[in-house]
Image (cartoon, rainbow, N blue to C red; front, side, top):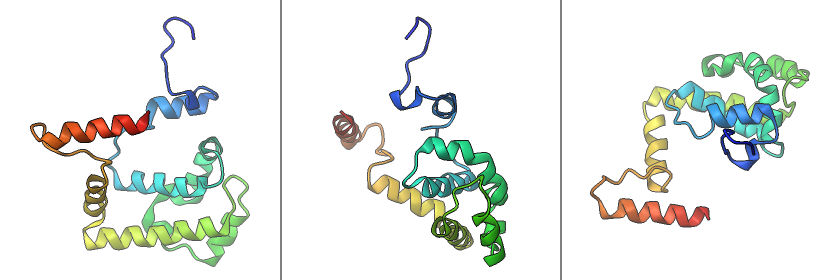
Length: 152
């Protein structure tokens, strides 16, 4: 590594697209529900494949899935599924496509019930993904220390 070159996670060094994703998106808090849903659906398509494959196809995914607008995707039917299965720009897995359509419907149901983000965040707190102990709580430091030890 040359002087002045920032050190980044090793997985992000092999490709310019991975570097850009690492430097600009990965690990950055996201609060937009639609963007969170898009990332979740893309992670579903990534199962069994490399993330780089998904990044290379992300623009085609966005076009095929109407910019991951849950309102539009939830209305997809068999004709839409057939078009998606013929689209070489995306991962053509019927199970993953149907899961994305089902995911859109679930997203809308949670949104309409008014509990989606609240439930997800409460779960993240409960399982330690978000350490929201107050700064003066003895558990805040203890949990932070546990996380650091597990990452080693």
